[in-house]
Amino acid sequence: MKYKILVFTLILSSFSFSQKQENIFLQWKIAKNDTLKYQTTMHAIKAENKIIEKKDSSSIFHEFGKFQDALFQINSNIKYQTNLHLNKKNENLIDIEMFMLNNESNQYLEKLMNEANLENQKKDKKKRKKVKTENNDIENLNFDNVFKNLIDSNNNVVLRGRISKTGEIISTYYKNSQKNLISILFSLPNKEVEIGEKWKLNLNLIEMDQNFVADSTSNQNTVYIEKIIHQNNDQIAVIKYDINEYVLGDFNTPMAEMFGMKNNEKIYMKTSFIATGYFSLLKGKWINYEGEMEIDSNFSMLGGKSKTEFKLIE
Image (cartoon, rainbow, N blue to C red; front, side, top):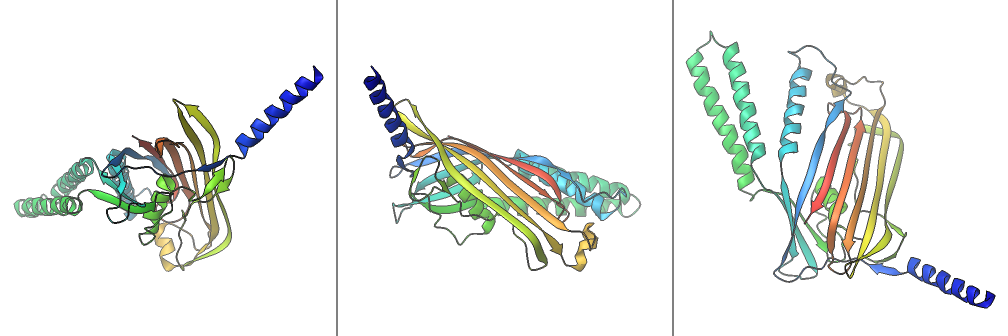
């Protein structure tokens, strides 16, 4: 009896060890002439501002606060769709396009312009009211058309990228912010990995210029497969993302005081990204993906805390 128990224990241990050491190869699988479509959410949660504390309603800070609110409303209302399809010239590459599904941002901008025009009309009642109104209408029309034409001319595309089937970023020539977005949503390790084995994303969430002198920095960039779920004759890799970046130092520029910062004040910025994705090994695509990026900073007029929620839904 003891011999049977020992054999059973050894078999069970061997099975657990082999499952843990299993090599997993993640890759996108898209058929020729097919398009993988995701409803894409990038929902901004309103920032808690630490910098702008001026109470004067006529100050530049008050006006910028209104501008921030407007940007938040625009960003919160926009809906996106992301399409992935094989590159026409090289079927080992995948082209990515993200575009807006509606024109709610355009409508909101038009509303803002109309409100601004009404304020101007009230202030300038005694100054050639009719001429002012006509000029405002023309400015509003021009602004609206410029914004609409800018979006329409590019077929509403707000993001482009290119990756290999194994998830390596090929389009390294785009801006860092675009590369970051492609990286967190669509890149894969580009090699076989084991459960629990860690790899890094090709990204830099924090960018500073030559005016910043760092005192201390930290960078944690960890992605790994937590486990494999067997579901409906498929294997689903549960992938965890844990990314944190931090900088602290001095920002040396005469413009600092204008933006509400003191010359002797240390500038810091913290950025984190936490996400969980469910990737089908059989179908070669995300089944579900949800993440949250948080930014905390006292740097610039955009200082404060803000969050953005990311979702991919097929």
